[in-house]
Image: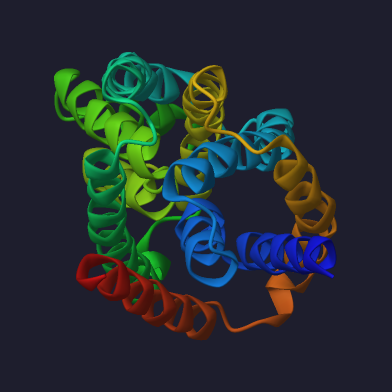
Length: 263
């Protein structure tokens, strides 16, 4: 029965990701901790590889549709991947099962969920204001940040946050891109965010696997549910009120964040 419960949980999170583009780490990690009693370090490590696999397919699809601005992805990754490696080194040095580190993980995870809830709510209210298309002549200018160092620095913050908590590559990453690239159309922002999440979560996930922080059986069960869930959610997207779904999701993430901060 527990195995089926993990498959159902994967399906639920996959459907939410398919509907909203948000919810992978933000929902899966607290779900594993609260409802299944998985240790925080195992929940984070397993969820990182879960995110890498689920987002890889989306990244390939977006790249084929030429919706990924690779220079944007490269600047973010230049900050996030080294930061992920440094964070992994710190986790390995202190020991993934260290009680102080696990308390830090849950506290930072709670804060990250609150930030994600705020970012998701912001997207629910202001997401439609983003342009959907730009003339070809304006795309190169729109893909240039205010300053080249800003995406690298903010990428480093996201990299550390994602490695420590598995949260941040989705809603927070999209809001960061909106701030750095205000003229970039929303589909291209989402494309850059998903493409950037793949190498980041893969590096962080493999690093967690190297220090024994991944439950491979659990990962397989979650993926067995999430892949059909994403397929269904992506097809229901056009028939579901996006703002309502994102607002409900923001409330759920905010509740989980507060519970983690106060536990």
